[in-house]
Every structure is written in structure tokens, then in C-alpha cells.
Length: 281
Image (cartoon, rainbow, N blue to C red; front, side, top):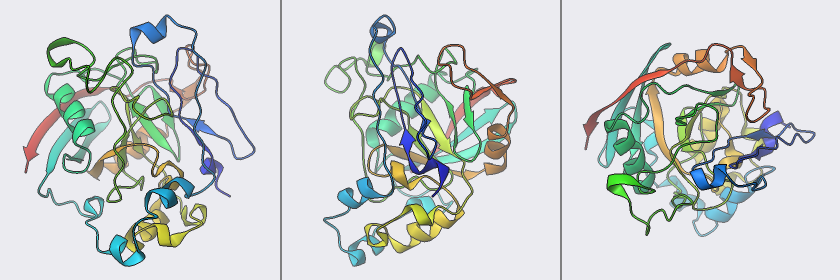
């Protein structure tokens, strides 16, 4: 069984990294100053295979799933998508954002990008053969918020101060290169932090029900990803070029993050110098 067969995604002022036999891993964030001052305990979400996606796709037949649009599998910028470019100190990564299938996450990310929110931020958490994470102004994993939490875009109906809702689509999956929202492990806790799937190992063995997936997505998992996240966390983008840069960032030498006590903090962090919103259809 793959070591990432159990995935732990955590948000809170105190991060407790729990390692089971399969070595759980965490994508964490704290997106409110009020939470930073609190003593909230960690919240965990874990899967052993594709159970969450099976539940998500249970209402669809295999034929229906196979006929769905799967925009992650093409590098073309299609209708309802936006092209973005990450300029980093390691090189350039180009991605497309799925406005159509994850409208809130897309608007949040694109607005932050256009306003320079991500400029200068580090990939503060790197985990070889899993993912790289950024989007925290504190560069430690305990900061950041959505565009609706405060300021000019404040909208309590979307984000009342605890984050905005998850957006789950049968069209999007955590295959290699997927861009997802880091959250608290519970619904409606997305802020500004995001991660890019970096695994390049065949993870098809983690999928116990192939009928819960479009055949082409099941085939894509041969090239890497984390299917245990499907149905629980928001996919809102896909890298279309520059995965060699993502791989390079993920291979960094790491030390212990003094804030979270997790040994995933790069000794020489790569920074995002700018995220440019280039094209929208």
C-alpha cells in the first residue's frame, strides 16, 4: 500500500502531525487571525482509498462518468478556464484554472493573484512524491484568508470568517499536477493556501472501485496523484507546463518547521515572484 494511502489535511493554530503505519501527511492552514489566538485542536480527515470519491460518484453510471468533460487531461485553455503563469525563483510553471467547475476557488485565487497577494510568498511546505504548498503570507502554514474574509471583497455570505465552501466536481481529480485548496479537513474552510500534486508514482492500487472513476482518470493515476483526496478537497487548477520545476521544488532539503514541528520546511525556500493571469475564456 502506498505510504500516502492515508492523507491528513489539517488547519489550526496547533498542528499535530499524526503518522499511522502508512505515514499520514498533512496539508494544513490557518486562515483567520482569531484562530491564531485560539487553542483549537487539530482536525483530521483521512481516507484509505477512493471511498470518498466512490460516494461522490455513486449517482453516476460508468458510462456517464466516461462521457464527462475531463479538462485536466488537455493543455488547451478551454471555455470556462483561465491561464496563469507562476514565476518562481526556480523557474516558470504554467497552469489553467477551472472557473466553470470550481467558481469560488477560481475567483479567490485569480483575484488574489491579480492583486499581488502571492507575490514573494514561499513554497513553505514541500513533500517529495506528494505535493508542494504555498499561499500563506506568514510562510509557515498558519496564515492567509480568502478574498471574502475582509477588505474590499468582504462577503460574509461566502466566508463568514471560517473560510469558504468546498467545491467538488466529478470532472476534476487529484491527479499529478492538480492544484487544490488546502483546508481544515472539514467543509467550508478554504482560505488562500493551495498545493500542487507532485507524486509521479503509479497509485492505481489505491483505488478500490475503478467504476467510481472515469476510465481516463483511472489511467492518469498511473502517472501519479493522490486519489484519497478526491471528493473531500477542492481541485481548481492543473499544471500544463513546468512540472519539472514542481518536481525540483519538491526535492528540496528540508528541516523542521518551528511553528508546526513538521519536517517539511525547505532549507532554501523557493519563492513565487509573481502570478500572472494571462488568458481567460
